Image (cartoon, rainbow, N blue to C red; front, side, top):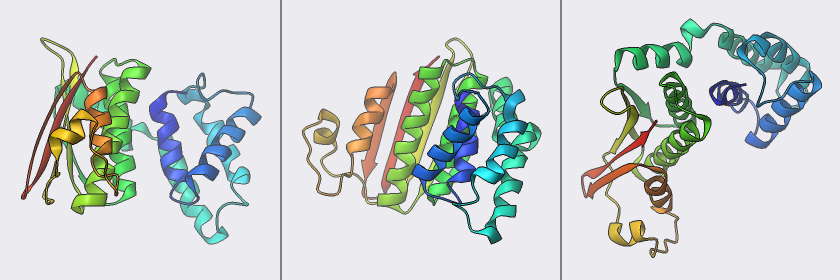
Length: 221
């Protein structure tokens, strides 16, 4: 199963149970069908989703199960989901922006980044880099700036790449130079994810001050 589809299912399950439980349930369900998370395809989605209904009974409140299953089954309609939006954005070279305020928003932005990377022809490790970086930036926005926006901009020529711009209106990042050099030790952990993003990026730039922070990075595909 492509990484984007895995994250789509996980994103739904995590709204109704812990991340650990969601991962265990998804992996166990897939393996019970004699499939693999790495090799299953979108054609296997109907079987996986229907098998998740009994597999999640002990983890989800009965009153919330219909909502969960409805969201899972919505993944069977690509035209309504992130995959279609990513394919369209990639084909048109169009930038899309995502408002980040909650963990669900962060998960959605991560999924969208992965799907867009795949739509551009990115390989697994390239899409993993993009998704991880977006996730780090989104969580920093939520934790330290009350949220922000993340823009995903595909480019097809002269170089094929995905450009990400994350912007917030927080109080800025103190000791930025030390953060990016890896010598800064923060009691809150602030900035540690930023260094990880820098290491994942093929091009990286950050501007920060008392009125907010903007991080731009590219991953070449």
